[in-house]
Structures are given as C-alpha cells and as structure tokens.
Amino acid sequence: MEKRVMTDSKRRKGLIASAALLGGVLTVAACGASSATGHGGGANAGRQEGTQHESTQQVDEAAAQDASQAKITISPKDGSTDTGLNAVGVTASGGKLTDVTMTKIAAHQTQQDRPKTVAGALSADGSSWKPAQALSRATTYKITAHGVDAQGRTAVENSTFTTVSPTNSFLGNFTPEDGSTVGVGMPVSINFDKPVKNRQAVQSAIKVASSSNQQVVGHWFGDKRLDFRPKDYWKPNSQVTLKLALDGVEASPGVQGIQNKTVRFTVGHSQVSTVDTKTHLMTVVRDGRTIKTIPISSGSDDHPTYNGQMVISEKFQQTRMDGSTVGFTNNDGKGEYDIPDVPHAMRLSNSGTFIHGNYWGKGIFGKTNTSHGCIGLKDVKGAKDASTDGAWFFANSQIGDVVTVVNSPDKTIKPDNGLNGWNMSWTQWVAGSAV
Image (tube, rainbow, N blue to C red; front, side):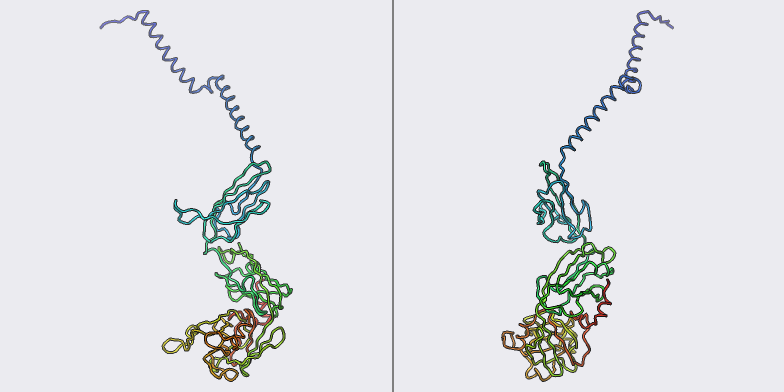
C-alpha cells in the first residue's frame, strides 16, 4: 500500500478550509441568536421596538384629538332581534345629526333588489331622529346615521336589527276610532290578537281618562278582551283619551306588545231610546228631552228581543240579513229568512240583534211583534225615503247611542254580547279589573 505524506502546503490548505467551514457555522449561529449571544444586537433591537411603540402611541393620540365629539346612539343596538316596532330611534350628543338613512331589507333580497327607504323625521335641533310610522313585524332594517360636532368633525354609526315576529308579539284592536264622535254609552273596547296571561301588566299599560274627570275602570271579558267605562254614561260633550303603552309589555312568556299609541274621541249628545215591547213604542230621549216616539215591532213570542241596555256599534245604509248566519235555519239548512237589502240597519249585539228599517212588514208597527229578535221600524225598499221612521232614526243616531229594551219575555242581554257592559253593576264591573 502506498504511504501518502502530507506536505506543508497541503496542511495549510486544509486548515484554511476548516476555518472557513467553522466560520460559516459561527456566522449562522450568531444571526439566529443575536439578541441572546450578542449584547450589542439586543440593545439595538430594543431601541427600535421602543421607537415603534412611541410612534404608534403618537398616531393614536393624534387620531383621538382629531375625533369628532359628536356621539351617535342608535336604538336598538346592532344585531338586536325581537325589537319592538316603536323602540327605534337615533340620538346625538356633543354635536348634531346631519342625516339618517333607514332601509328595509327584504327577507330574500337579491342583487337586483333595492332596499326600501323608511321615512323618518329629524328634530329641528338635530338631536334626534325617529321613523315616521310603526315598522313591520319580522323584518330586518338597517340604520346609518351621520353627525357633526362644533368643529365640523364628522361621526357615523350603523345598526342592523330585526323586529319582533308575529308569533312573539301581540296587538290590541280598539274601538272607538281616533277622532270620532260617539254617544254616551260607548265603552273603550280592546280586543287582543293573543291571549293575555299577565293581565295586570297589560291593563296597567293602558290609560283611559275623560275631561269630565269621571272614574274609568277596566273589566276583562276572558283573556282577549278588555273594556273601559265609567260608573255611569259618559258626560255629553266630554273628551276621552286612550293611551296604549304596550310596547315591550309581556302578555305571556315570550309574547310582548308592540304598540305606543294615543287615541282621542269626543262624546257627543246624550241619546237613550227606550223600546217597550208591550206597547210596541220606542221613546227617543236626547239630552233629557223626548224628541220622538216611534211605533216599532220587536221579537215574536218564539224569538223575543233581549232586555237591557244595548249600544249601537255599527251602522249600515243597507245590509244583507241571512238567518243561517245566526242559527235560524230550515230543514234544508238554508236561513229561515234571507233579505239582501235591509235598510238603515244598526247593530246592537254580536249575536245578530239589530234595530233596522223594515219594508216587508205591513200593518205591524205599533201593533205586534213578529221578528226573530230585531227591532223593526217602518221603512221602504232601497233606503231612499228620508221621511220614514227607519231613515229618521238612522240619521239621528250615532255610534255609541243607547237603545234600552224593556218588558220583553226574554232574558237580559249578556254584558259581553256586543258593547253592552252597562248591564253589569258597578261592583261587578270593578271586580273584573286586574289593577
């Protein structure tokens, strides 16, 4: 085997290569751990980070100094669900609102659909904004509000929310109508579209007051109807105010009200007409004075008219009366009567009692009782003769006037059959209040 001898020159080349390789390893190690092994490198890095932190803080402080002092608050908050229909609004402090845009977002909106703008009203001083009317249930809306402070710096706020669903909300349908003039017997009657379990909370959120300062008390007829009346008839020419503050009030678990509404109506003259089924006469008394006596025909012995105080709740120039709709049917299932054009009809009960014109009865008025429970007045077909008793009484009666029936062989009408709570004593009435 050949023996190789390393010369000096080869030895020097090998040492140089090894040193270079070690130098490379040392260089890599120094780059990867400069902050740990090199004191100079760590100090430099710390100064750079500190400088960067100081710069960010200075930017933040400058931005804060330049921020608008106008603070915009949108109710409800972004992302809210089950929002009441009247619980929406925008306010500004430290500045004023310049514009507010509210849009209704379709449930299945496509790119071609344009959001529908909701009208609203901005206060004169720019401090608040509200929608012009109640919103729709189970609907998503978006509000974008802009404001400005005294230095002219702008602010903006957004909120997207969804209103309460029909399943989780309830409404009260009321009578009489806002702005109407009614008779002294007209109660305030509210029918709810869902059962009310928490009657105390709901009734407490409803206020009825009269300019006559009469005490007004509510009475529950079941869990879906609440009526209000004073002890005696309303004072003539008084003003009555109904305030519904039901928005957010819980009627039952998970079901809340959505109404904030004020209704005002006027009580007109006092008119109470007394029907005597034995004498077959009706006496009309207005403001304490008898103004007319009218011959009538009431319910027959087989179908007598209810006794009691009944309030006119609806008026029809002409209407159809079909006996099958109130249980008067022949063997073939058709109504015992079906008159398509009954003139001058005014409803007295939910069960079908009317006082109305009659053109088919001959020689019965003031003499005999022949109807299925209604009170008939002499009239003509077509309701166009103003001289008839039926036309006169129709023209001289208003919603809320009282018709009292006496001397009938039938029982007294039930207080909840129509707007007829006057057939209940005051003690009984007050006992039906939940507050």
